[in-house]
Length: 164
Image (cartoon, rainbow, N blue to C red; front, side, top):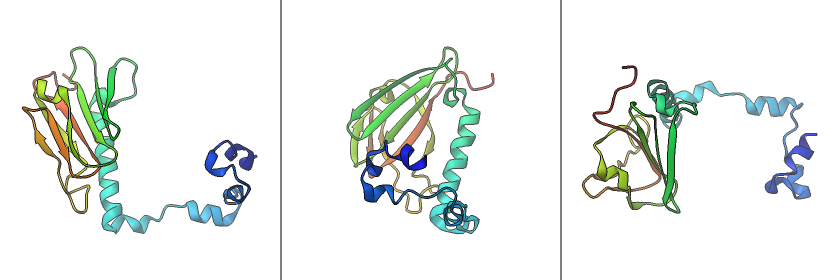
């Protein structure tokens, strides 16, 4: 059943690829799937865990980041490498997310120039990146220059804070 399920995925459609599908009943598959808690102390893993915790905390603090149909979202690609999303509801603080998925260099974010957005999170914060390289923000021009893939989360200053 598992091999038939995986056969729908192109990377597992070839006969030799089907053989690489892990057997869910195998003790080896179980052992390979277990979390290695000691990795938390390694810098890369510690940074990744800190980022996930910060994102979960931010999601809990900002209603616009929750999973509700009450919020409207606008999303667009500024180019083939970057996605911008604005999510919010009437009378609540909206959130702007700029995610550079590949590449580097400047991108234009028109909403960024039109409002007073304050940064809530950067994946290039020293808590989340072993060698942080923060993006450069040119607010008046509405331009963010990424040095590598990463993401920024903003909220609009002056909007009604969450829980009030």
